[in-house]
Length: 454
Image (cartoon, rainbow, N blue to C red; front, side, top):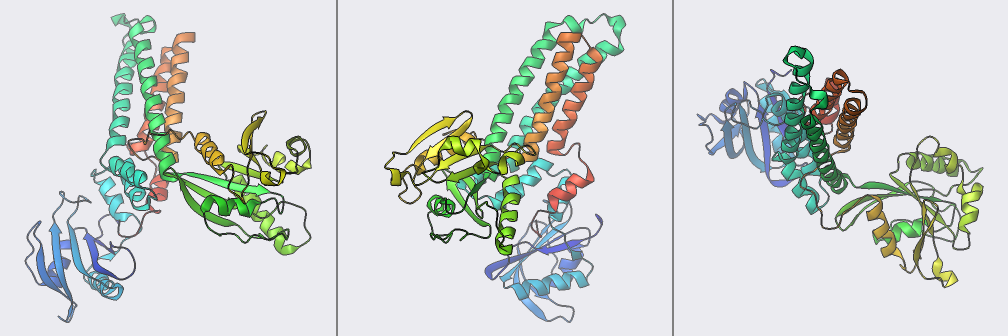
């Protein structure tokens, strides 16, 4: 399939002033020549007619030919820039398919660029992140990742790990050289330096991931506690219906907002209680599904509810039992503080934050917003230099864990062979970020999430 010539509409669906049809593969030039009846010169813009198999003009526009390997995909690539009507663009794609191309799969152009060493895996993911960015800073970070900023930092770590592996394994394989690396302070110093660099890259990646993906915040609690009012207050619009009737919210409601450029995915859920109503039961089931995938839970309680009662009784639910499955951080929101004429404030009950606010008047919402930024490790003024995904953070954590394990093996047991193995595993984990080490399943999952035409 990698030998096929592929074609797809590269511009967004719907009418537009200009639409682009992209071809990539060994038949691209021949197909474009047949459709335009023009001798195409590399990297020249040709104004020409686009014709069907009968010679009828479908449209007129610009044709560009980029010969491989000097193209985005590394293959011969052609772009047909026509008027942006969906029907016209579809006719151009159909004609290209009649001449030997096939419809591209999601992300197949980027996949070929990766396979042909035009970009690495982190850069390929940055393309999708750039397209899907919901904030200005997230877009800038994704652009930097696409330019290779993140990849360069990973390559630097890999080079240092490789250099250390060479020294350690040489000492193991050639003991007659009498290299006592176990007592060599240079090795320990290198390990410390690399760990510090790991921490710096991981902090930047975490900030970049936060600005790109945001966090999922699920609002939960008993009926009529003010969950929907809190959703409306945070989003700044009347997304949810608010009434004094218990059980008004029966389905999951979602909103995307920003807090100082940090994307936040807010999910409002049905009130948690025992119910005989079949529709409400389904809403509660969906609520638990959302709770189990949350980054943080806002547990909303009435102003008259004592926090001690919430923590020590069934009022905190079945969620206490659910947390045995997955330890999800919880913030208790005591809503309607205005009814008690209590000022908004943040307190703590053990390790659980408690925020007193009024969703109706807006009092205390700034405290909540600041709390959410703190919870996600948002650093004011530190925008990060590149975008990152959760899989990158997991790979960095794995690599750092292997490096720390190797350091312990060296310092505590003098086990050079185990250090060498941990360094190899560390390098492998880093390779998963840029794709120098990757599985077909991983590549399939990543590129299948792309747009068709990218």
